[in-house]
Amino acid sequence: MQNQVHPWKLPTHPHPFAHLCGVIRPPGWERIGRTLPTLAQAAPDLAPDPTQTVLLYKCWTEIFADYPTYPAQEIGDCVSFGHAHAMDLLDTVEVYIQQLDVSAVQRMATEFLYGAARKVSGDLGPFDGSYGGAAVKALTTVGYLSYAEMGSLGESTTYSGQRAKQYGRTGPNSKEEALAGTHKLQAAALLQSTDDMIAAIQNGHPCTICTAYGFNMTRDSKGFCKLQGRWGHCMHVQGYRADTPGFLIGQSWGPDQPGGPLDLDQPSWSFWCSVSDMARIIAEGDSFALSGSPGFPKKALPPELMT
Image 1 (cartoon, helix red, strand yellow):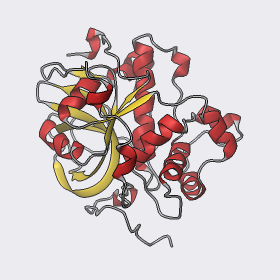
Image 2: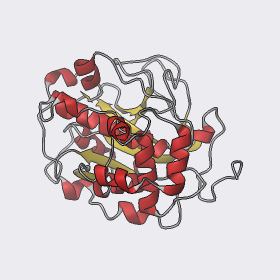
Image 3: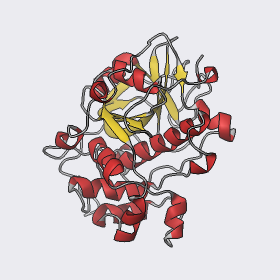
Image 4: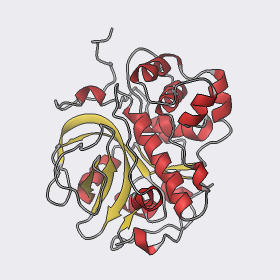
């Protein structure tokens, strides 16, 4: 069974991380995402300013002096990594703008989210993979757990691909779900355009993307990668730049992935994506903005996050 390919898995472009590209698209996958509002419906008052750079990822270094040292994926559970890391950043942004206490920033357990997403979508089983609509539905209805909370339940507090594989087969247990239900993502909205993504980021809301488009694995002189091939992957979006218009995408394959130059103090596990390339990803219909508050209120971000 281990060598079989998921019947709904997206085609991949051969590269060293192809086996970690865990976005699947089962028949009817769009139905879950369409139960959520679009950003225009959830936040009609948010408007993008394409001339304004906002670097949400700087909140990590402003508060903690460095970026998270996330472990690399071990199986095709990228959907949980993309959404969990976006949630970590969301909490960090809200701490920085003084809407949360710093104690609220607890690294989210990806294995729990992976199992919860697959359970919500009815995809539990031996094959790896999930999709964005399932993850945000799990976050808003089931809830989430930090690794510290996993420890309080007698589980390991470090990521394990083997545990993720188990949760992908069986889903979380009832005790974990009960604790997760005490804190849920307050709002998620389907993105329909790059203007939506700019407006979300400029108001402190990280975004997630699930895409069939692949990228090359070497950043150019400004930290950008270009679309290349197919891979079926989930990542999160941490910022928008106006000088060379584009979005910063956070990767889940460990440090220095992709390789090449860095720009605007970006993490080594990230790359910039052009607005036109991001438009193609958003058009797939599986990209979301996340909010720690009901709805998507306007937020005044401090000037040090804008350059």
